Image 1 (cartoon, rainbow, N blue to C red):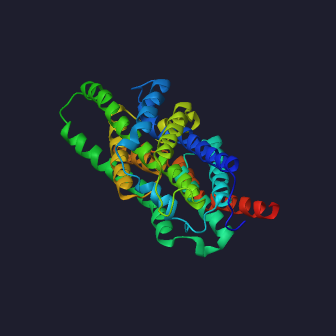
Image 2 (cartoon, one colour):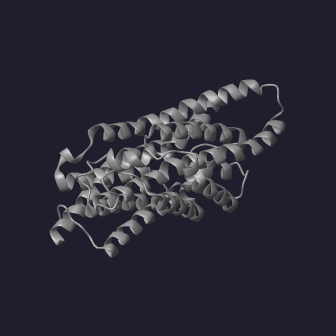
Image 3 (tube, rainbow, N blue to C red):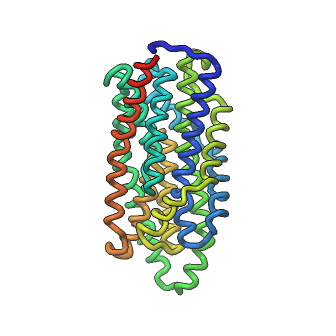
Length: 335
């Protein structure tokens, strides 16, 4: 299986699987973009997913492709990548995503893909296949992205509460119903900008491994458009189990809290995307929702559920890596 070169039909099939992962990513992570705006009843669910999907798709116009480059060359050595490594990585990521979607747990599609790449790369070439710097930087985001969302949300809601201390509750609610449309748009933009680039990176490195990009790694425009479209369509399909978990089971949200959570999440995602760090949109918005809930009172957060979500985060990389390792080992035995 070393140095494998495949025919066009098999290559197209693997690209289709990558786009299917992107679709599932959008479906799985639809909750990240719309949970707060749905739970506060600012938008009905069906309209909310159309709103989010539109901003998911146009995100490539606002961000560079730094995250795609990190996924393509910064997790596993590009020389190790071949179509079967990519296929096995996608099997691990999709398998874990489907399991956590079915359980209604907001795990990270990003870290599932990273775990999948690491597991398949290790199965082929051992631990030397891992680009340690990129892998550790991305793994650190498991802790840093929810923490950033939590702290930013806490700061924003405390500042906003002080500024609006003399306002009537009805007036605040009415104002933030409109403002939440803006914050939801920004968060959806950040979601599309960071998450769709992961699929771009995996498709681009697959093409690079087959010598179809020349001597230098880059992301073709058709890959950008196809990835953004697949994510937008997945968001349209919606992941209602996770929407329910994120929007109402962690803490009760009002438009004011929803705006603060989404704004904090958007700031975190914009920063990470511009820095080229593939973070979890799920971790980020969950941390922000917990932050706004904690600002009210600590008992406003359902900490038992939050702890289950954290365990799902912790297991994502090793679980998806294990599935991918097994998938690659099985392929190697069969081919």
